[in-house]
Image (cartoon, rainbow, N blue to C red; front, top):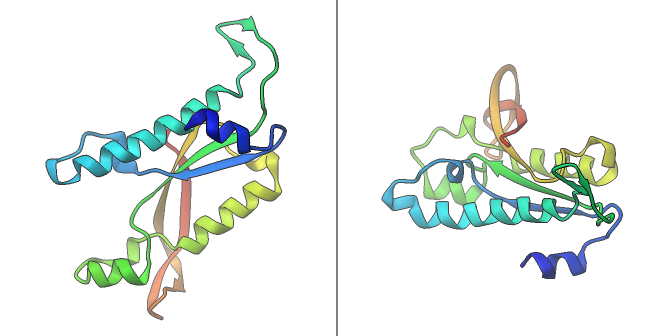
Length: 151
């Protein structure tokens, strides 16, 4: 997977983003084991791609490598119509608006200096504030989506 990805990335300023899961940072109960394992593999891919961008290892200078950025996004539950339909009894106000994630990725695409460092796993969650926005169903929802480096 990593060698294949390397052949398709822009060597000077490419950006590779994959969706992981916060739950894969911890142990998983039986019913979510397979999901946790698959997302842990995504996290490993992100950090492995990032390792290809490092020019030093334990103080030993190596040949310059590709300078693309590899980032994992670890959202909570996304506020989508299908998630609302499949989980009707849940509280939607703490779910993540996918448009907020798209906006942040747009910032990273257009402003390389604002990207997290390569190999970052970024947790995405809603922070309840007094200011609110309308959710997909027209009801008020949290206005602020927070992006925080998990590791």
